[in-house]
Every structure is written in C-alpha cells, then in structure tokens.
Length: 613
Image (cartoon, rainbow, N blue to C red; front, side, top):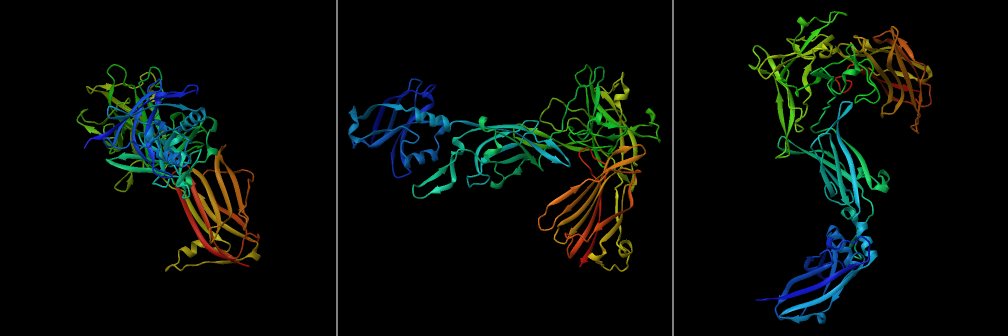
C-alpha cells in the first residue's frame, strides 16, 4: 500500500549576532501528551537558513496531518530538553503549527512553505546550554609517601545527580604518559537533573552547575580494571571551580594501576651516562650515601636517610651517539670504613629481575613484560638490554636494576648494612666495551648507605609495674595493672632506639578503651648538631567532651645518635581529662631508612592498664 508523502520547504531567520543557522536541523513532530511526542522526520539547514523536510506517513490519499515543526541545535538535542519543551512550550524552541487545512496537495504530495524566525532570547538560551565546561587534571598513584603519574588510563567524568552507576557521564579522556587529561563538555550534558522528578508536570528538574565525580579504569593484562571510583558523597560543588572560566582543576589519587616514574634530566656535556637516583630521590639529593631532600622534591623533607629493602636504581645512557651502548651491568662494592672500593673490587648485582608494562595501542591494554638478564650476548656475562627511551608506551625505561639489598643466601645477608658504591659497565651491539663518562669517571659512581635493620620499641615500666617481667611469665599470664588518679604522675619508661644510629622518631600515645587519644608525645629527628642529633618535640593533649587538641612545642632536645634509651615520660593522670577507664599506652618508633619512595621501617609496643579514681 502506498504511503502519503509530505514536503515542507522553509527558511529560518535570526537577528542574533553570530547565529550559525547551518548548525541547526528542523524536526516535524506531534505532541502526544504533557511530555511526549511523535517524531515524523528531520532535515539539515544550510548556511542561509533554507531547509527541505520530507517524510511519509499514513496511506496515500488520506487526510493530512496536524503537526508542528521546530528548529533544534544538534548539540542540545537531548531527550530531557525535548521532555521539558513539551510541558513548557516555547521555552527552548520556536515552533510553527501546521494544521490539517494548511497543506496544499500538489502531485499527490502535501506541501507547505514556512518561514521561522528564531528570537534572540531563544538563541541566547541555546548559547547558554552550549557553553563549554573543562576539567584539567592529573591521575597519580600513591606509592608509599610519594605520588607517581598513571599513564594511559581512561578517566570518566559524571554528574552525580544521575542515579546510574558512577552517575551520568558527561565525558571521558585518556591520560597521557604523565597522567594528565582534559575533559570538555557542554552545559546541556548535565542540565537535566534526573535526581528530581516532578510528577505533576511529568518532567525532571534542571541544574546550572555540575556536581562532578570521577571513575578511572585501565586495561591491565587483558582485563579492564577499575582503579579509582567515587560516589555522590565525593561530588565537587561549584565552589571548587574557577567559575568565570568554567574550569575545574583536579588531582585524582589512586592506590592501584600502572604508573610512570620517568624523568629525563640532561646528560652532562662530554658524558654518555647519568645516574638518575633511587626511586624518586635524585642523585643531587644523595650525599655520602644518605638522602636529604627539600620541600619541593618528589619525596620531600627527608634528612640524612639511608636506604634499604628493594631499591629502584635509575639512570640513562646516551643512545644518540654513533655506536651507542646496547647492553649493561650494574656492579657494586662495599666501602672499607672511610675508604672507597677499588675498581677491581666491583662485582655484578646478580639474580635480579622486575616487571614493567607495555601499552598495546591496538588493544588499549597494559601488558606485563619481565626484564631479566641475558646470557650469551656478551661472553661470560649476564647483561641487561638498554630500552628504547623514545617509546612512550613502555614504563620504567630508566630503571637500571631492582636491587634487593635485603637478599639472603642460605640465611646470610648478601649485602651487609654499610656503605656501597654502584657503577655501570656497558657494551655496544657488537659486544665491544663502551667507556662510560671517560672525562668524568666520578659521574659513574653512586654511593648508597644500606640499613636493613629495624628500630626497636620496648616498653619497660609503667609506674612500679615491670612490663618485661610480665612478658616473660611462663606460662604467660595476662596482667592489666590498675593505677589510681591520686598518684598524680604515672611514669612510663621505655626504649626507642636504632642500633645503626639512624633513628627518626618515636610517638608515645595514651589512649582510652574507646580510642580517644588523650595525650601524645612526639620526638622527631631534625638534623645533626656537632656530634649530637637534634630532635623537635611535640606534645598534644585532647580535652575530653570537646575533642579540642592543645599542641605545644617544648625546646629542642640534643642527644647522641642511637635514639632514646631508658626514656621516661611522666603522664599526668590527675588531669580532669583522664577519667576512669581502660587505657592503652602505645609506643611507635621509626628509623630514617627509605626505599626511594618513603620510610619503610617501624616498630611498635603496647601495654594495657586501667585507671581508677
């Protein structure tokens, strides 16, 4: 059966400055209720505003339709906006009613010619709904106490008001090799507030500013993995935006995902190799094997820190010169007291391998790649191949080796605590040795102080109660001593020490049974003073009932290296904030050892007791 053909010829006009008519289209529709419509067809508009809309409906020869037409900017053609337009006609779109008697039948086709003027207030509303919002951000992963960029991850921004998983998406972007991303979207993408529905007028509410939340994923080993997610409770209000420019700056911190810790400082003139340091600690921050960093460093405000555990030794070869190095070894040798090792004492760091990640641009997948030594390339040597530094899809390119300094052979440490020098040997693709930094051989040495011994935390006495004697009871008998407030002062004696003289801090806390920290004493290393070490002291007291914390800083204390032996803290249990309760005294001790990303050694001791009136 033949269908009836319709043809609408027309022209759009607009007085608004800068109006781009070609960005519009014209739709033909029929309202079906308060907030719904039946669509018959649509057509584009040329730069002069001319359009020709053709569609078919019903049986040929039937009665003509009673319909409407209206121009719509394609950028804001959203269900929610049309939904509102049906309940508030003329709010967003000018429209023309074509009644059944307005059609002219010509050659079996119902035709109509129209001119539609777009008022300035409508065009201004379209411009308002088309305004762009921008998110400029970076994704980083917290690694110990530093933050590393997360490359090639998908960041999705959503309006938290939309009740679907992770909100309603307004845009997404992939991070670059440094974890940076930019997402741009229009007001129309969040304008409809799906969290508020008005049954009487059968439409949703609207909002003028987004409440953004974020979700991040990476494809790792063939599996799309969510590495960061937020809920509506994390939504960012308008106050967090640069409102005049409609820009939101964010740093999204994840604890999962593939990271990039690459930096490429220039290799000094005349050299062909440069140590980059350990982890995120630059070589200029390492003096005599110890790390001291400033407030602007990636691992800030460290003082006189040795290294321990697994260390990421980083460096870079100059591979742009003729006949560049292709393979390398990392070698080590221990100092003898204050005497550095001779060249003949160095031997290769053996048995080390690590995993990097390679980004497959075809599958958008992070694929694991194991880096391990190769034998047979250089006769009698196990060597590593120098990576392509220009390959942005490969992570950890400047990692020379993962040096496991606490490795043991038959229960004996391979690398005893002490001072070591590292140096690098290299060969070209033909297996010929490459002389590294011939004019500055000192630039091919990195001195590292190793300390894998943990600090000690030992509570000895609380009042007259001998904690050590209690701990040694056989069979063990739990003891919870009781002290009375009339004592006034309750002395606590303890050791907070580091046998390798790299003590960092202790924190002594007095805590109620419901985890209310009444008092704390903190003593933290603040550098050397002659033969002694200087410690900053912080005391905190919390007022019961209000939770107000009073912090004081007594004068600095100076002590020989090694920490605090037989330290005594006199706790004022006559304070009105010390109430009848079960208490815990908690001693935590840190040393200064870092792994290039943060402190790694801590010890703890606790004791429980009660206080009565």
